[in-house]
Length: 324
Image (cartoon, rainbow, N blue to C red):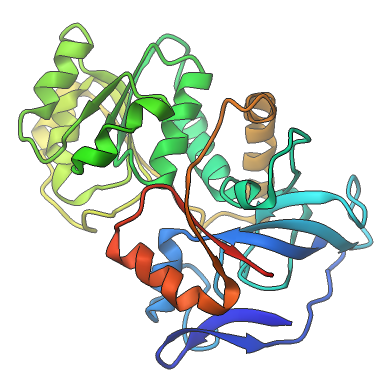
């Protein structure tokens, strides 16, 4: 089978043996996959959790048809249309734990569309609902809202009953589109006064919950924008791994600052994350209330070009890889 791996000079496509599912796994004949920021790290030779180095398989999510199931798997059979988070998903075939796999909603969702959701849904539901403890009627801010994760995060907050959803982006054109994906208010986080606009929109209180994809230099502004007893969930570090932190402001507001990642999750934890996500979000997904724009589609042979587009950060929405 063809699969994208890390070569000496970056991503390349190689012939690899077709995998066999373990007892708890599903073998998927992949139709489409989509890119995530972690793919850039791995393709550049960096380690991401247990994955990294020359020869490492690329891809985190995919969709397609079930080819075979392991002996312990229930609920899936060959021919089922499925999507899921799947390490090594840029390949013609991939195996993944059955607890990461979901049936594609029967609402005319294409494979290209389905490929965009698995990682975003499991990551952002965990950040917004489980770690962030968002309650109906609370206010919410998505830091880095124009990223794919940010777009789905705002929509999840809306579905779960947030009263006000605020999104940030430093790009004016992208910021103008945030309202289509759940934002009641879109702010420029490069403007030093954006926390004041957050307070104005929340009656002077600040937001209950911030989910942060940027980190780096925005941390102290996040602390300023959060209300007393607010929560900040650190999901991504697109703006840098380190930055100033106002410990006194953190203490004065008694803010819960929570870090999340899938790199240290056990298989059992990931299965539970996906179970909770499906329970809360699948009706909304089936009803078409959760959407993600597709920026461009590339065949697997052009994986290096697709990664280059993501690296240039010129896109809005998901970049999709197809196997045909």
